[in-house]
Image (cartoon, rainbow over the protein chains, first blue to last red):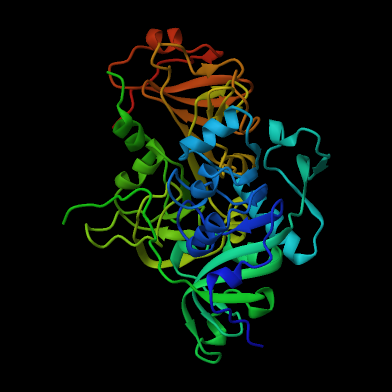
Length: 231
Length: 218
């Protein structure tokens, strides 16, 4: 089954105002930067974005924030983005902060047909407000529900025409679970290869989870904290 | 004299044991990796999806796809592995990681911790901290004993929104090593040259002082 889409514009076709999107990445690592740039260009607004972070002021999801295209963010950590903090504290932006492990598991659950699960994370904190609490093995847990999205937009290192994906290093992060949880999953890859080229033993995301795949034009792959040592 | 950040990291490094998988939080905890005691082997987990984290790369060898949870460029050690975020937190919640070291704004005598939010002022988000503190058996908090204005951060009860309840067992500050049990801080060690009286005066929570308190050996 050929899932290849020629251009980024066609790849994000159907994403409309007020939709819910999942966007892969941790910090600026493994984010679908070509697709995000296209959403900025198209000016789609009122978006609910499920993404671990919110980019930085001038890159990643920060670009959509600057343009006021995001209505609500569902994230775990948003500390590196001044515009985000400003919009959140002023009430312009609705924000749902979720523990990182719960966010990952809620996406996984969404893709795996599990409607909800109990986790110890967040018990006794404001995250637990309004959530069912149940004790297992003498320890309190809170009920967390699966997340779903109209579109999941993920980024992989290599992908084939069937939509099979391979990620590189820590750029994997949230991409595999989000790929599972989108009604339509769009995968942006650095290198698109013919089916049969990738070793089936080494596929991270099987193509069944991916409806559209395209090769990104350019990848800036910006580094957020460049740390080095001297020889 | 009170310890600096490096001193705190060095003291915490003494808690490492051979064969442990360890998760280090952002800030002082990250420095712990620089002071692993001789003759033991530990492997560092970073919750964004790497086990077997190595030192920072040499200049010019940074890889944008290879970072730690603080978004810093890193390298990997022999035998390292990469995984997705759900698997990463399965390692954490499933208690496969033996030690978690993280920073805090406040801790309380009942083991509560606050480190993610100052209402109306600062919103960073909890990241993986709530998952880590709710699940780990062995949590060490690295922090300063009081804030810049001299107000104690070692409290009867936290004033900031909580990250977790009743989870912290050990705290290493610039002044002391404290163990939390039975609803009180127990003073185990003091920083070189720091008096018990000074620690007492900078600790708002209940402090148990039993016998002679040794100095830390850094």
